[in-house]
Image (cartoon, one colour):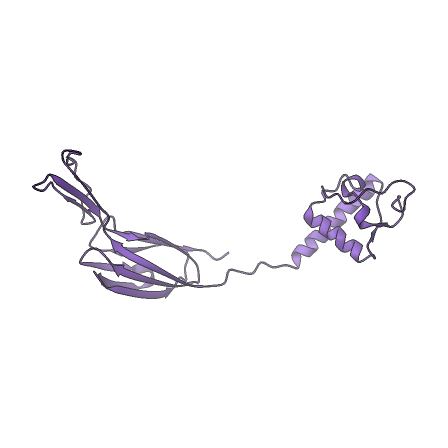
Length: 218
């Protein structure tokens, strides 16, 4: 409901058939069948501006329906003049770390697990040492998921923190390299297709697989 100063009353300059200042109209009372939300109110303001600040109130329901239809048509026409610009391609930069989160505890607090972790070099368990401390770790990319838009120019800078080396591939975008501890390797490519694509260390599986999510163009 859009309510302004006051509704027009019979006998006043706002009576049916008279021109009344827009600021003195209650849209809800003048047009009870019209859902005068912010957009329609703006259209009414434009109508008034084009009519010297005046609006002809409509009394009958048929006329009210006509107003509603006219406003709807005007709204559609206004919307047709606007176009949503497609998201422009951007240059995106991400740093991706090769890390090995690690945890450990002594057997007097937690027993060493009897069930082994899934196979592969990505998970590592070290049995209890002389002091009874055992550890578990996993090699991962951090972050492990990157989201970009289709058409973006994407630069990924991989930095080796843990692990001697990581033979890495981003097959979908033709990238292959070996990342070593203490080194950085940068790749740049155009994300020209939508979908989910992996960046994978061939040694430390199954944990060291990341996802590049390319959102489609609108």
